[in-house]
Length: 345
Image 1 (spheres, rainbow, N blue to C red):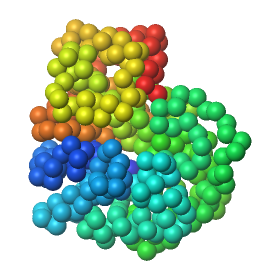
Image 2 (cartoon, helix red, strand yellow):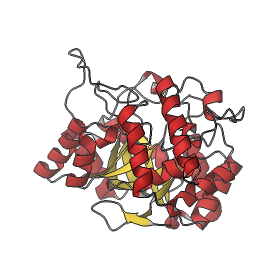
Image 3 (cartoon, helix red, strand yellow):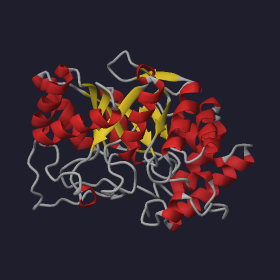
């Protein structure tokens, strides 16, 4: 395994992070336990979850993934071996069953206390805001369209003050954002600098061969401001395994079970995936290895969040840390990207 540190800290994290969002729906508790055992045994010390998991979000599965992780901590006593990240859900139709007051102080208090209880721990290493409250272009929206009727009011300072209180209490150690844009990222950084408030140290956004939008303004923000990317969906919901374009996807594959996840289902995504598959095969790689290695090599990456529904997938994903793509392979990848850029924003 290779390791980095969470920006602005001395906390060492594996460059592969274990994603957990299928546990409690696609995966059972026993399967989640097996994945955590395997990951930790193979050097992965960084786990990421969220209060809204398992996915798809529903009242029935709310909090189930955190419960599974908490039960594993209780069973194994391995809490001190894991750097643990979780997230508070923002407003949205798909999370109205959780709460509807966004990141108000009482919402953050409720979110942290409930996550600590489910996770059976006294502290969270990295507490993240799952998506912005304001109306902006996240979750597969390619371009920003301003909504003059957006009811959101600037509350960056209030959020940081609230989180600062929980840091001082020892309930969370560090904070991060997710599905955020360049403007929101810089507003948080501005507030922390000007008011001596905690800094957002990571940004968890989608990043893969099919979604390289982070390389726009956010890549520069990440490097110059030292806010590290936690890349999610590096396999594009399994599309970049090649199993869908090859017709080998099992009936329990994610996009067969949940066709509403249409982000990676476009004709452009399929066309690009076929070309990436050829590059991988021509160079003696699996598409999964090439896809994950591409993410692992990015200079703005802190950790690559991989998700698997079985141990065979998990092994291949973790082993990608040992693959280094040549300049020639990277040039071939970029040639496809130049023609079909970001088909799954």
